[in-house]
Image 1 (cartoon, rainbow, N blue to C red):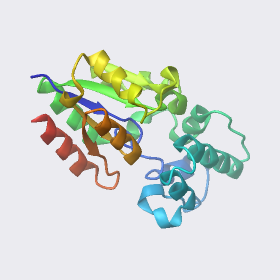
Image 2 (image 1 turned 45 degrees about the vertical axis):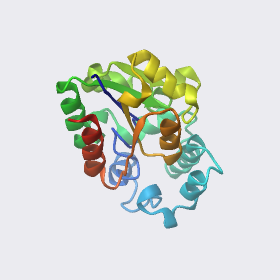
Image 3 (image 1 turned 90 degrees about the vertical axis):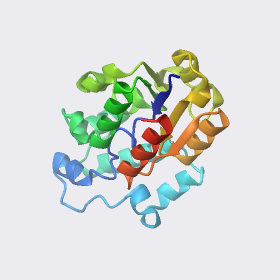
Image 4 (image 1 turned 135 degrees about the vertical axis):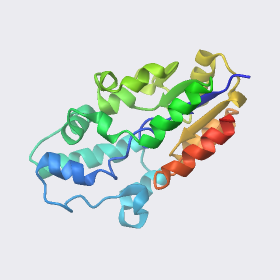
Length: 214
């Protein structure tokens, strides 16, 4: 029986911007320790993150505010997310890809599993040319990006895009995401879900591979 590993991108495959403040500060010429917001790594110290988790604002709202704040620190006005990410992540996005993700993707593929990405803002956030710098993406059978579909998780249609494209029932898809609202959406759609813990990426991938029987 064929199964599929369905991954969110930001946070699950890529290290979060919370984890790479040192790289951001270096890239922008900011003093070490300038950036103090830590999202899931310090929820008490990030009221804006808590508002997003409480669904008072969207994830895009959160990052738009952070983009504006960081831009102001260097005297720049960024209007598009790729401008922000391009400045802080530079020309080598592969450097922030989680090694645990690459290992899990390779194991799933070698076991005959299908691979899919289901993202709310892959190209919106990183820019259309970003994918060309990540060779491992060619291993994916399907990439569904709401940048183009306009349908955001946890809308049931987002998950249906994946199952239709893979030609698999939802129950044969192991879906991994770091936002609980998206996990609840995946479960409602019938997928076998893993709530990804960005503070413990290895254990989350072990759980996902176990669900795949890999």
